[in-house]
Length: 236
Length: 119
Image (cartoon, rainbow over all chains, first blue to last red; front, top):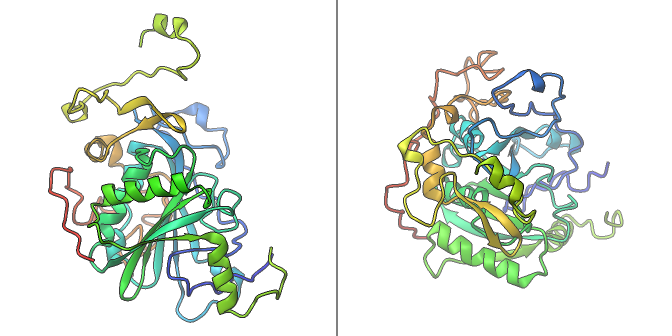
């Protein structure tokens, strides 16, 4: 395991790019039935319960928090990113969301990540490595509402970019909060433009809001430059 | 959505789905929406299950959406109230005195005006 990214806490846009090995398998949300589910392992994909409204994709909530001081190694970072759980329907989403604190009430340097099931909230994930993200910086007080609008738009497939969306992140920081949405193909300008326009619409952003698109390769490069690690390990 | 229908349906339509409406709040508010969301709309990525914000917010009030999820990890300050006595009580998805962290806005059903953003 390469721990080149282990102290990546200075990029403020909520990336968590560490190898994080095997996060504890979270217990998958099970539909409220039934014996047929019993013999399946925790890894089974979660499915919508009877009468629930299925989502186009399953998603997983993650949470991470920077520990005071710098983490000494990858492992300590690993301990900081946790799967909260996965869901497949609108109702299952609300069960998680209603039992999680809202981002605006988080303390410290914390992030919620909501990614399609199977995609880790890391640059290196296969789904992310050619991708990038739109970043919007918010003054304090707006994160909870913006995050809710963002994830509802994502879950409801409002972005209309096919398979391109990977996930969304809200990052609570000292003086501002940041929301971002990640997509698969940074070079696909039609997609990134459509995501931008949808963001403006669903977040009700004023026209002069600054939105920044950043490719993950640039993020990695910036991180390496900052940490003086260019060529240190030949990348990965 | 009868089975007959399903049999004669060309395979371009992925599946049919029965939507049970148990609550008036789940009825769509405009003619272009079907109960349960706008199914099979065509987008650049193919057919999609699309829900708008208002519909998603309405689903929040359904009883099944309120039970705590199974296996919710206990993370103080995140999935349970901060600090103190967070012991085992919430660990296996047992209700933590239900909805204490249903923060402001949880009663929100989408009727409120969008906030003004001033960044």
